Length: 145
Image 1 (cartoon, rainbow, N blue to C red):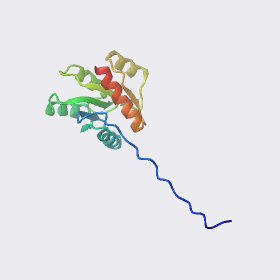
Image 2 (cartoon, rainbow, N blue to C red):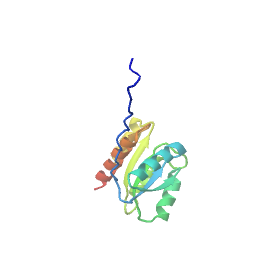
Image 3 (tube, one colour):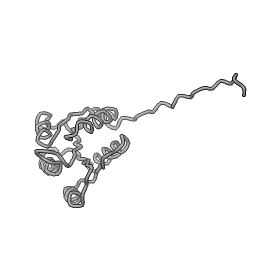
Image 4 (cartoon, one colour):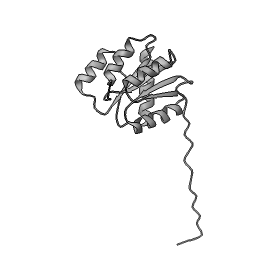
């Protein structure tokens, strides 16, 4: 065996992330800190400014504090105090209505039916990748247009 051979480790090509947003504000609503942290980090890499809430009540407070500035809301379904479906219904009554995406580890048929009745088509099943998150946010924004 020839010990004089040299091996070169090639570095992985740099991944270029094209910003999805240009500083638009995304409200991330989830009672799970780990999920919220992951979504916030991934969303910032997509060009969003991010505001957080751990339930629907906090989300409505954030909407009041950021009057008209939040363009997109990503909410979990199963949360304490005010769940995601209740939040979606409250969001639909606001002007301007932000784009809305929903994430959940359990999307049962009754909830899916209720979301469809509210016009929500941007659904993200947990667990998910940053690419699935990106595609869901795009779908939510496109549905709003």
